[in-house]
Length: 333
Image 1 (spheres, rainbow, N blue to C red):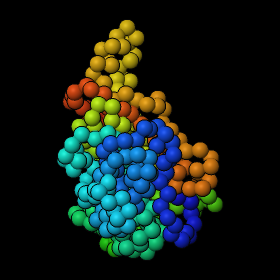
Image 2 (cartoon, helix red, strand yellow):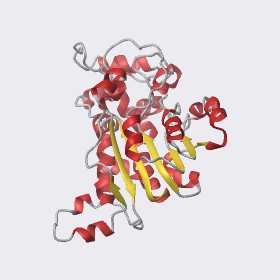
Image 3 (cartoon, helix red, strand yellow):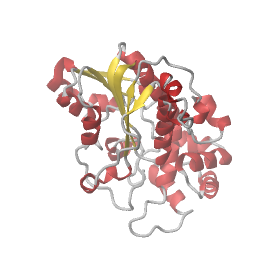
């Protein structure tokens, strides 16, 4: 999620990305929906306005749910909040769902809170934990081996200078604050030109993903949505960088039979085992107007699919595009 080099802007209300195309793609909205990344409640509000009878808002960040009291009061029994992971959404729901929405990555609300440690532009503790539990970013950068750090930076942040940065981190640790780490990373890279991303962007993304096991959570969440959705139920996923989108794309291709249509003489065989039907062959991107109004939308992509009646079959997770050497990510998912 690239961010231009600039001073932090003042906080502004959260604007859900691609919300109009999403609502259009999943319409008509009715019945029981689950927002697996509740955050500031932007998607939940629009789902309720569009006709959802009930929305279950799930978030592993307790601070997000603590701020949702006004929305709960406004919609009463139509909104149920659950603190938990969206990879367990089928358990949280307890019944078949008519739709699932996922808005991946870190929220602007989390970035704005310096004490959460997500931002390289704000001074705060080196935390980055979405749930506030488990090892923090400081634990990771201060204890991981140089080789492990380099792998994380390269595979989760697509940082080409990963080895150089990992070497510098090991030499300068221990780290306690966000700006301390951002400065160490920036010192390893060329000075950015106007309009280029901050030098620490990719490294902070990679560390955050590793701390929160975001890719393991993502593939688990897609499988949980497959279990939870009733036939005809809709799945909508908004991603913000190519690594996330690759996982979602490959999952939906595998579960829709799209990858099996290379044999034109046997289309029915592939269709019979398809757990999803793609509602758009390609990812939906934001328009120029949305990008101008909400710069966060620039890298966003929306993929939408409909659950079929086909039973669930085994999924080959190794074919889902999960980045990183198998020997250090397989044990986490």
